[in-house]
Each structure stands twice: as C-alpha cells, then as structure tokens.
Length: 218
Figure (cartoon, rainbow, N blue to C red):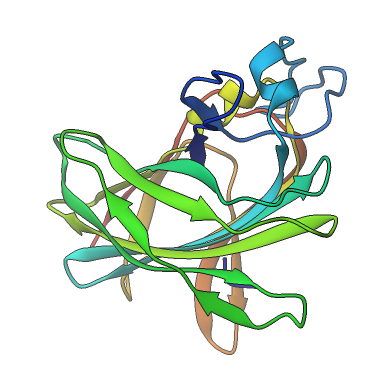
C-alpha cells in the first residue's frame, strides 16, 4: 500500500477556494479525529467528495518523501477538468516542499501522469482533475520536503474544510535506520515486515483535529 490532504476550488456557480478532506459523518467516539463534523454547504455542493487516502512518509537522508493515494467520489458525471488546490507544509522547522509527480488512474487502472501548476505566494500547487465519467477518481501524488532536524509533519487539518470525515485513512511512517521515535501526534503502532521496521495508523470515519507530527532521536 503506497499512497496525502487537499484544498479545492471549482470555477462554477462562484464556488470559492475550499480545502479538501472528508468522509461520512459518524457519531463521536474516543478515537482521535472521529468527532461529529459540522455541516458545510460549499463542500456539499462540490461535484467531488474526498472519500479516503493512503499516505506513506519516508525519511531518507535529509528529506521527507511523501507518497499519497487519494480517492475522490463523483456525485455526477463531470465533463470538464476541475481545479483542486493541494497544500504543502510551511513550517519553520522544515525546508521547502516541492511536488515530484502527479497522476490519475484511468479506467483500466493505469496511472496517467498529469501536470500541476505552481502558484506564486501560495503554500501549495493547483491540480487539474480530469473529467469524471464513473463513480470515482484516484490520484497518486509524490512530494518531497527538506528535513532540518529530527522532525517531520504532514498536513491533515485542511480535510476539515470538506465538512465531513474520511471514510478511511491509512498512514505509514519509515524513520532512518536505528532511529528511536519520541513522539507521534496520533497513536501509530510499531510494525515490521521483512526485517524492516515502520509505524502505522489506520482509522475509519476520520475527521482530523491535528496534523501528523513525528519526532525521533537518531
């Protein structure tokens, strides 16, 4: 499983720029990020629904590489491309972030590379989501960000702007060999596979109230 939070703007019916992340509104429980979400009329009018995401964060040398797979549901068939704003972290403890690749899966499941736009003075980039003729669209994203110290962050809270929780979200974090984790902002669990150690967190009905933050000691 290799697969990250979006903001969107739809240039129809004067819908303004809004942030992306969502899922079905469930009752509150004791898990982080599962409280009841407020109603959001703009999110409800948007032609796409942010359904789920899978995110992998790998600390490699002095960089954090983030790979994300996002599933967007289509309310109705859409004949034109739709602009979505994808936020990148701006953090004094981190260096600059840059997009590496963006692709959308076609009907056969193949990833088709797609162009994105740099936005001057904006903390992110603009995607153009292809026309939606089926039930869903899947985006595959890669970005990298410089790490200055033993700290990394992934944006989640913009998901609240959809006004609904994600149906499902899964995250994996891989730290440098021999690193000892000191803090996770969510209850990640230690796992191992083929001798490789990583940390995972999975949740349903996810309405995040904080970003993912991890600190470690080398």
